[in-house]
Image 1 (spheres, one colour):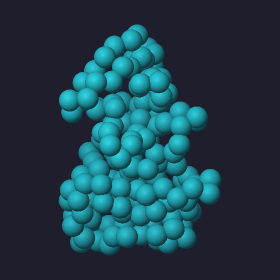
Image 2 (cartoon, one colour):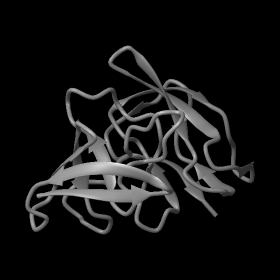
Image 3 (cartoon, rainbow, N blue to C red):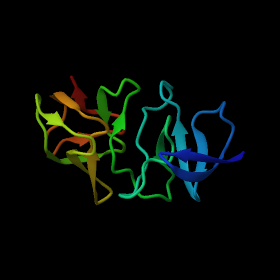
Length: 150
């Protein structure tokens, strides 16, 4: 199904598959994403690839870029937004926060290396870090908890 949506004043042309399946295949302005609705238990939620000038094209669900798209650079979040999860398997290069730190939206929490690419894992919201579940050099799997909010 094809449709236009407006998110934060910007129009996106979207095409999506059967919304009763999980994950849902979505094409946003020509880029393909695999979307899991928050609260689904089949796959840990992940992040959507965003550019520095545009907000995420899909507002309610979180999305995993399809294989032809560069891996996500923003953090994966559970439906409660209290946990940041690894958007892909890799190795933690740097942890930039510690328990008790106040963070802002978009602040880099840690750096994850995956397939020889460095990915900045950024905070999706403001808040206080409750705990950091990873350390420098640690290997993580897709969906592993990286940081918890208080």
